[in-house]
Image 1 (cartoon, rainbow, N blue to C red):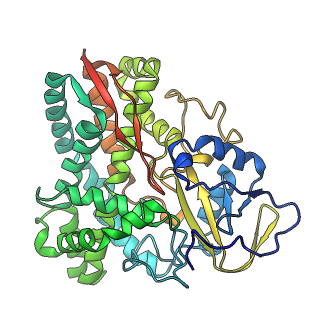
Image 2: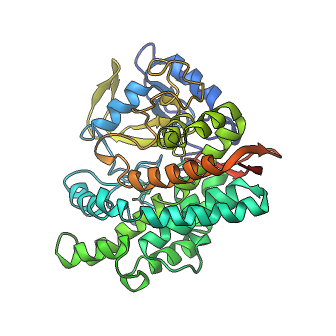
Length: 408
Ligand code: 8QM
C-alpha cells in the first residue's frame, strides 16, 4: 500500500481516542515541528494519526515505555512507516536496527565490542588533534558556514577515519544517510527523491563495507575480526559496517550543527560554557535533548496490547516522537528552554532499551571535543545570516548556518 495515499483507516477507534489530522511529515511541519509536537503531547498519551492510520506518542513516558518493551513493540517489521511484513524493505534490513532478539543480540554484541569504551578512548587524542587543526583554520577564515565547515567537516573527517575508510567519495556517506532517514518516512516528495538515488549511492556504500576497503586496526576491521573469531559471519560484518556508515554520520552532523545553532541563538549560554568549557559534555546532551537529530522512530505491535489505557491491535505501527518527548513538561521543568546548566539525562535522542544507540560514546566524544575546544578559543559565535534547515523525514538537521567566529 502506498502510505501517502492510504485512505483514512476505517479501523474503529476506542472511544475518546484523540485524533490528529495534521501531517507530521508535511514540509512546513518538518521545518518547524514543535507546535504540532505540543498539540499531540497535550491531546493525550497516545494519539491516532488519521492521515496514516497509525498510533503515535509525543510524551516522554510512553515513548520510553514503548522503546523498553521490545517484545510487544518490535523492530523487525521496520522502524519506519513501511511494514516489512507487507512491503519489502528497500535494502536488506539492518542486522541491529531492524531486528529483534535473539537475532539482534549477536549483531549488537559485535558492534558493542567494536565501539567499547576502550576502543573509543583510543580515538580521543586523534579526535582532539583534528578539532584543533580545524579550529586553527577556521579562526583564520573568520566567516564560515557552521554546517559545511564544522558540523559536516569534523565528523566526516574523524568518523570514517576511525572506521578505516579512505578519503575518496565521502560525500556519498552524507547522501546515503540522508536517503535512509528519508525512507523511514511516508511516501512523500522527500522519500521519493531519496529512493531515486538509492541504487547508485547504495552500491557505493556496499563496496566500501567490504573488508578490502577498510584499513587494518579500524572499527570496520574490528568487525571483520569478530567474523574471524566466529561471532558473526563475514557477510554480517559487512552489513554491520553499513550500520556504522548509516547511523554514524548524519546523526553527528545533526548534533554538532544543532549545537552551533543553539549557541548562536542563545549567546548567554555560550558565555556560560566559555566560563567552564569542562561543561561541554553536559552542554552537548542538552543540545540533544532540545534539538534531537533523530526526531522520530516507529515500532510495530507484535501482539495485541494496551498502552496508556488504549487497546492496540496486533501489527499496528506506532510513531514515537523522541524530540517531542524530550520537551515534555511532565518530565522537564521549562522544557522549551535551552539551558546547559540542567542535567538532561533521560532524554530520548539516543533512544532507550535494547536498541539504544550503540555508538553513543563516539557521538558524545565528537560533540564534547568540538564544543570544548570552540568554547576555549571562540569568544563569540555571531550568526550572520539565516539558519536554513535541511528537511528530512526523520532528522532535524541544518543545511546552512552562516557564522562569524570571534577569536578569544
Ligand atoms: C539510526 O543501518 C543501521 O543499522 C542504522 C541506521 C540508522 C540508525 C541506526 C542504525 C538511529 C541512528
